[in-house]
Amino acid sequence: MIFPEDFVWGAATASYQIEGAVKEDGRGQSIWDTFSHTPGNVADGDTGDVACDHYHRFRDDIGLMRELRLGAYRFSVAWPRIQSDGEGSVNPRGLAFYDKLVDELLAAEISPYVTLYHWDLPQALEDRGGWTNRDTAYRFADYAEAVHAKLGDRVSDWATLNEPWVAAFLGYGNGVHAPGRRRPADAMRSAHHLLLGHGLAARRLREAGARSIMLVVNSSPVLTPAQVNDPSAVPSEADAASAHRIHTLLTRQFLDPAVYGTYPEEVLDAAARNGGTDHIQDGDLELINAPIDLVGVNYYNPCVVESGPGLPADAAWPGSENVRFATADAPTTAMGWPIVPDGLSRLLVRLSQDYPQVGLMVTENGAAFDDVVQDGRVHDDERVAYLDGHLREVHRAIEAGADLRGYLVWSLLDNFEWAEGYRRRFGIVHVDYATQERVPKDSALWYRDVIGRNGL
Image (cartoon, rainbow, N blue to C red; front, side):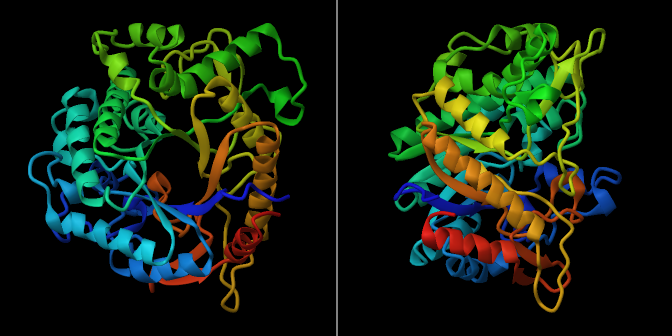
């Protein structure tokens, strides 16, 4: 299985998950600093205070990337490093870190892919309402412009937001992520303001000369239980309606406005029943509908649903009344997530059909397993099998016509896994958090060889 000649191979990380150095060089406090330091929010009381210490070890980490033959590295910028309070003057020391990071990547012949928002909102903005406050979208556009002014002469590929569904509905709906709010109305309002921030930032980036702009979503194929192992299975009318509604709330809620400038009726209905639609102002959809070049796809597992008459909406899914979230008949990762590789090809083909105007890139795909270092090696056969299976489906999607430009494994390093703390390891490189020693796992060496031959 050989991939297209210009196919992009790389890996991804996120600022709060790896950087550490949370109080250095003028960095302000983020909502994840506050959330992780609140007892009961994160497993084992873990925080991102040190994480992988990438802030001090980035040169060594880039050396690892080079050894693994990565052609691209997707990282996120920590907004509180650039503006400690989320607005106003720019912190030159914070920008200097990313300036050096980009230079080192380019010297190693690795293309930098910059994500501007991977959930670390400055706490000062959250204190004024966070993403429920319309003004945050405008502050985000200012921040995006400031980062591009420093890095845009060398960085061609930009992502505005990472997984706005997670930021809105897990952060403001069911509270399992920062900032820990539990109000469906806040989640609906935040989702719209995140999209508004995306549109405003995308326009600023384009005006400043950005070559490629991307919105990254956590999309999944929404399947009924029978469809998990049999794509040809025909669901009941009620189950099909449930799957359609959840697909709309998960994927179309974000991509329809960004690509087409419209909200699906199901989204407007959910908003109307959860706080109203007064936050959607005239002209907003035109602003959100800023041209983008790529949709970033973060895929881990399918979403499995069936009809559930009489069930209330799930806290993370306003508008999901009468839907039951089911389990998949499939092996699972250490996160308990079902392993369904062909869900990725199904998803990529559908997205290419629904949004043919934009290209696609797999911006995250990977798995957590219970890795153990033995005699200086990590034999993570399960992860190798996971990645091999998913890459075969990536190739299948390309053959089926999906306009897919690249694949970025999640993650380069074991890291702070949000509410799971450090007990879940997604990296292809093992990190000993006590010593900060890095050990490339067997999956890293396997991936290096895949990149070397541009195929399986």
